[in-house]
Length: 305
Image (cartoon, rainbow, N blue to C red; front, side, top):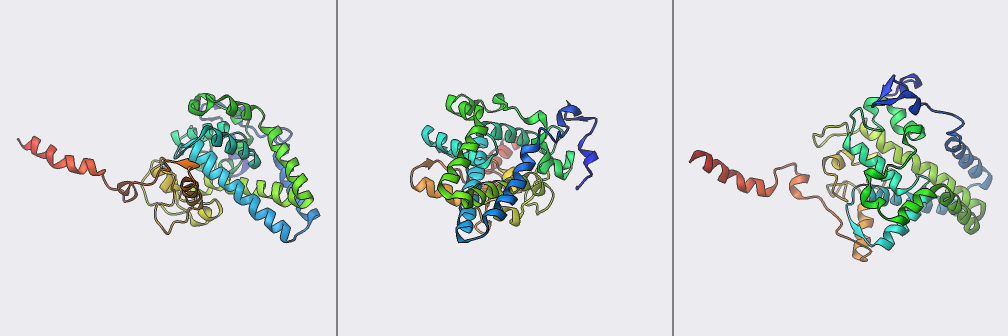
């Protein structure tokens, strides 16, 4: 599961020329530089109670945007909200430096359509751990936003605007953070949380398809993992999610901590979002739908007649 770099370059990957998947250091330099800058600025700014507050707040905000907005709203539409709030949170998503909501959701829908099959864009089974963890996002093949995969949201011009200007918007958020919090805010409230949230997100693509428990039989390698669930506000209940993608709740049972779901329910109480999808009991318990159970005896009697 943890292959050498050579295994990242098969002759053909999901029908695409290997050249499109080759990692080019010069083109991918910003990704690696941001890791270095986050460490350097953190050392320069130093540690303090203010740094801790910026770190916790910055990470929590970004992780909720990733899990509650990118994933559970734009990718799976597990709740509803107004067009205005839809735009506001899409704009805030640029704090994460994970590109636009249209880009993110379009690629994620591809993942679910072909989960752990050759066409899956980040499958440990197909391409190895490190490809699924982060190298796939550095490949030229996945840079474009595939509007055809997300026509329900691509129809909004304001979201296409955010998609076109995703890099300047992220840089602008960095500038605002510096104006508010100075060097400490920039280091511990912007750069460090971005890198930590990156790798928290990446764990769901990689480790959550390698390590954990399996409650439901699915056509992929998805696992439930408590550690990943804690660092990603609930995304670690990945086998649950692949079993039933329509739910805004990924921790199906009360003991499965799902912070994102609790926050979404809070927003629902405040009437900012609504129709937050839960988990039907028969889905959770892996039983036939109640309607089918009622129809079964009637079907048998008809066959006997």
